[in-house]
Length: 252
Image (cartoon, rainbow, N blue to C red; front, side, top):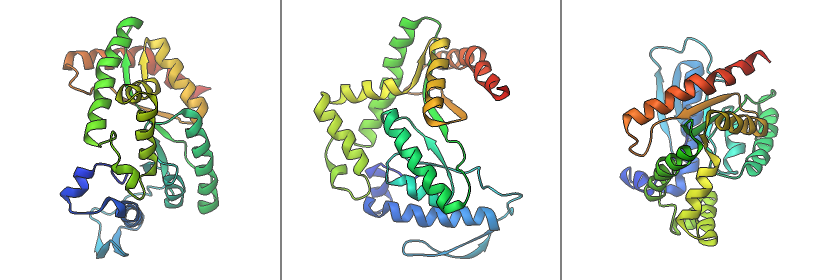
């Protein structure tokens, strides 16, 4: 679950982005309760849902199996209160992520009486035997993906700086201005992702695991118009050379 970022998406539903956080909390509370009880109902400021049964009724609890994308620091206490895990989409320095996860874990234990589930990491992945080609392809395709993100979500500009609840994304706009524009943001995003030779991919994932405590990695293998054959080659090499190394960690 997540609350969204694209102004064009909110405009399409004729909703204000400044209501996004409140709407997210109410919608998430309603859905999470429905997944536990089999009954969907809510009477809030934004969400008004009359009592209705979920069909089919949930067969077992979703506790510990639901995750929220929490990119901004302000979202961490909200996600913890909801009782969901954190889906990490690399977009910020890892030292910042470490501090925010520590805050999240404290809020989670306080609100739920137990430890938080390990976060799930989702990263843009390019696995290639040749290190030079891996770099070239990462720049072309991971960089190309990030370029589409900046355009769709309007990360270059100033409207997020004036939108309540989106303060973190305004900082990205500041980074772009301070470090040389969109190229600096692209390089910043690229450095956070998992790409390189199989050994480099393993090392990067293990380092992120050390810093975040994640126990699951969701590799995004096709993006930015990558040819199907290239995406399959990327995925198969990762599955053959990287995945067994990661799966072996379960026995340690």
